Length: 194
Image 1 (cartoon, rainbow, N blue to C red):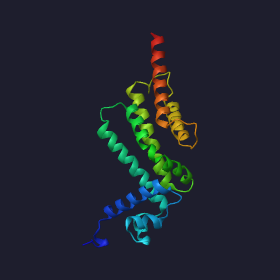
Image 2 (image 1 turned 90 degrees about the vertical axis):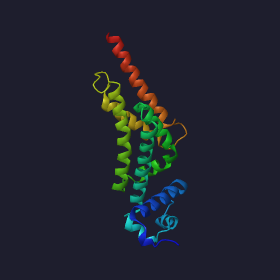
Image 3 (image 1 turned 60 degrees about the vertical axis):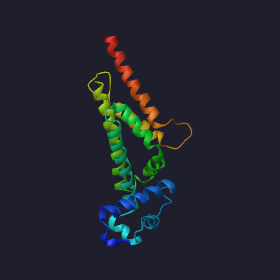
Image 4 (image 1 turned 45 degrees about the horizontal axis):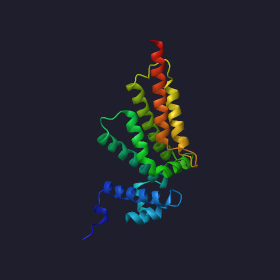
């Protein structure tokens, strides 16, 4: 016997909506997915979706935050002993399937504070792992390394790699190259000082 909709806990209903939205956004894209599509797929009355989320942008931001949280949890479990570069490269590689959603985020950034915050959360995760790697390798206080510039270049590489074209390598490959180059340059400079 099906449960009365009012008996379904809010967290469960929210999870149903996010699962449906994730699947639809990945299949149809953000622009072609409607609130009606999401409500129908989740089995929620169309108007009731707004009890859980203020707008499609709010659902989209929650989907992106959920994808990132899931990836962070997986990395923490499976890559607990790995260095930050390996975790960053693995995380970016694992999330390549959501690249079209990241591109859609860029379209929504000027229009939605919720999407901007979700996007910032993603970029802050990347910066956190870059900072962790630089600290682990002693590069944060290395006078030959501009840590802020390394962070900015890593983000620019990531953001640029998400612009659709046929010439770009995947972001995880370019960021690995960047960070390994910075570490090698720093090691080489320290070797010449001796």
